[in-house]
Amino acid sequence: MSKRAVVFSLITWIILSGIACGAQIPVTDCQKLSGPGTYVLQNDIINSDAIVCINITSSDVIFQGNGHTVDGQDKPSSWGIFATSPAFTNIVVQDVIVNDWVTGISLRNTRDSAVLASSATSNRFGILPGYYNSTITNCRAVKNSQTGIYAWSNNNITIIGNIINENQYQGLYLGFSKNCTVRDNRLEGNNLGFFIVESDNNQIFNNYFNNTANVIFGTNVLDNQWNTTTRPGMNIAGGPYLAGNFWANPKGDGFSQICPDGNNDGVCDSAFSLDAKNIDQLPLSNKFLRPLPGYSDIPTDPDSDGLYEDLNANARKDFNDVVVMFNQMQWIAAHEPISAFDFNGNGRIDFNDIVKLFGEI
Image (cartoon, rainbow, N blue to C red; front, side, top):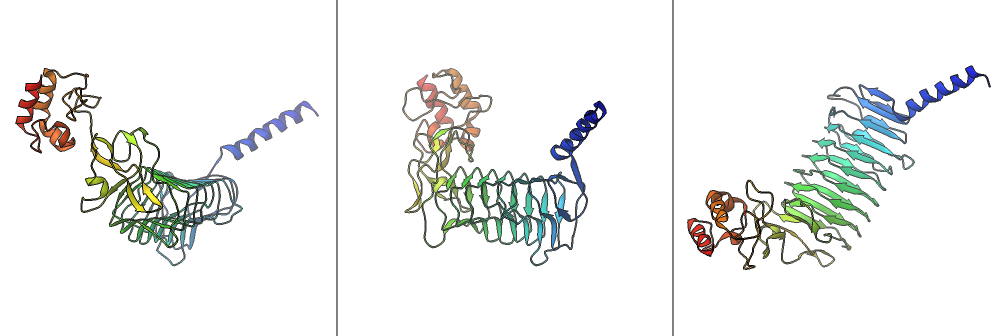
């Protein structure tokens, strides 16, 4: 082969590699994405009359929305973004807003797919994940007329870090699915937070539930895991440990809102049973200690009497703790567990607690 032919072959290889690995294909309107590549939405698509707007018909596709909107007309059997073949793998949809379709984003029959940092609002169904080894992460599924995230017959999927709020029927549906992980999600303001139908061996923890009904099971209730082992790390309620889930309701008397938490570690003292086969052994509470303003460490209890006299967290009782108590009395009453700083035992934070603390120095 001549030197010129070698150079030409090398240049061709570089160009083709660039197309395969990094070239971006602009998208300006509803269309079919029929080959591998990175497709980038250049503008909003508003009030589209298409039945399928972004129709993905290939594996190895990245659809980058760049924060733009794909908006429809609520036509029957319509999809904002759609990929359906079990032969399709490695599809990523990210950073796109999808409104006014029957189904906002559906990767239902694909595998090894992901929906990332996207929003589905005012659809009937918000987001449908791929059936195997797929993820929905850091998305918003809000104010859809039926379901925010709908997972049917899935295996080994992850639903992580999403806001699933104010959907008219259910926030999250998990049906006939197993080996899935549901964590770090907020499900609030839905008529039903989480509907589980014949699904088992799923791990569900560090979610914030605050709905009219938080969890309902279909027939044939199966076993699922509702907590992880307790370990340090900020949980979904702001407490210092990862453990189970936070169980609230709009009335303010949900399990996590009223459960005893004797050591103020942000984990309830007793388990929360949803069903005989589904028990959150380590439900979260909102009665956890926080660092006081101006400090990075939480108060301590130097004499192990259940009262936290060391407000400045320097491992001892001293006069500065009294000063901190005086300056932060209102903040403590609003943000800390009352029992931890009620030094005079009258059930509230008041000036007499400061006097009592001063007497112990």
